[in-house]
Length: 250
Image (cartoon, rainbow, N blue to C red; front, side, top):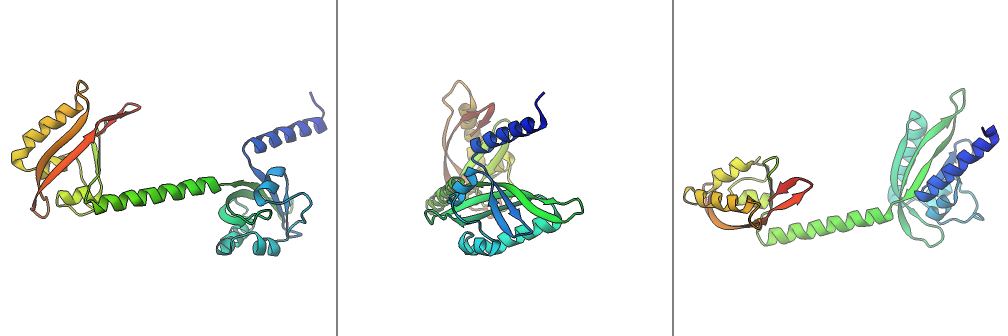
């Protein structure tokens, strides 16, 4: 069994390996001196600092590192972490010292207190989430472009889960059945909105498309009678069956 000093050293080594593998920085904010301390190389890398850089006080850190639009949120999160002695979590932007780039970071930590309850320091981890934020922004922009294209072309989108029998329509699809965007729908709603003369033919097309022996394509034209507005519309609907770990959708 290792001596306490050796066991502590081994434990620290395992922690260093874990934080390096996860690209996590470890920080400490000394409440008594009001200075931040970077505890591992990953923290220096995230903030663009070197080992020779001077330690920053809170005022300088807020002024030179935190994005102006995030400073109020940053101060509030720190104050709440100290006051409540709970885990604190914050996402904000920082300016990296070495290249001046604005980067997104995620901070999580907790207050360390003395035996008498005096707040000593905030200790936690930090990670650079800029790539994730860029991916989220790109996804939102892509979704916005798709939504605008669908709206411009007066298209509707739908999804029918064959396992749960749940039907999902967007606002465009609901409008084609004479329904407002907030209307609740089901597969019964679909059949209710079909023109009586087209209902049997559409049911046959659906049965053929869900038959595993067929290709699974769905391509049909039919009329709808608006459920709330009574307007007759001609609709062309296309889709295909897909399998997702046992789930079948249209």
